[in-house]
Image (tube, rainbow, N blue to C red; front, side, top):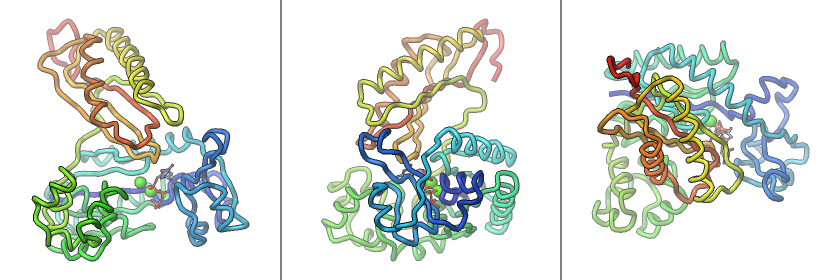
Length: 348
Ligand code: DCP
Ligand code: CA
Ligand code: CA
């Protein structure tokens, strides 16, 4: 099995360069102004010219300015980036391959039993079309799982296309820092360092039991990644025919406001379901975190329903599994596997 991970290069900054070519070649950041972040302007991303100065995502704008005197500040325009992201999704749909959105600028695609050569050709086609039709550069990694493809993609940046087959993956990852594994943040990296592990290749020198004891299910995950046995696949996030609503939350939304937002979305979704005279079996909940990464959880109900209570209960259950310490920026509710309420025929 092969998978492909497409990640846009310096996405928000590339979008800005596209509509303001005069920014090209000058160091600039895209950020949120102090007003929208309670006194702290934060860098969302920067172009590669600014990165030369050490400017990084998540850094305060003030810090970035101090690193580079001629740095230009561009105010973030989420809606514009979102509209470009949607156009890229439309373009990728043309390839008719199972696809999962990982973030506003990142998609995992399942390639089935395609050969490496065919996968590279497909990747080249996608890169060219995104360049020609959207006008932006991206990088594509290809490997035997979603996680490995992401790691290959990270390495191939910017404007790259690279494939690492399964029999070379262990060698490819062994000397990298553990934090290069997607999903391993500073906390998990510190836990691993606590038992003497800094490189991915060192993980398999420990027993899986010890890793599980220290880190729970993440322990099993990193162990499998390190031994070349990761099998993360693509969970199709774009349900073909579905009804749903999503909403952006204000900065630093707590659990209560997330639940309140969900209740509203459930209401709006049910309204649409009723208007179309439909019933549903599939429910999914989506979270977009502050760093624009996304997660979706889906579940199938036993029977078709149009019940608001059912959707409310199920979607809150799903969303609870997605709320971590990471700040949340957007939530969404969606129903799929629809049928018309009259029930004579399952339409989809
Ligand atoms: N983003 C953000 N805050 C962060 C990280 C990212 O607002 N802490 C936003 C801005 C980025 C977009 O998400 O443009 C995509 O994030 P990536 O991590 O993919 O980074 P870039 O696309 O900016 O750069 P790269 O070329 O390294 O992928
Ligand atoms: Ca990116
Ligand atoms: Ca990304």
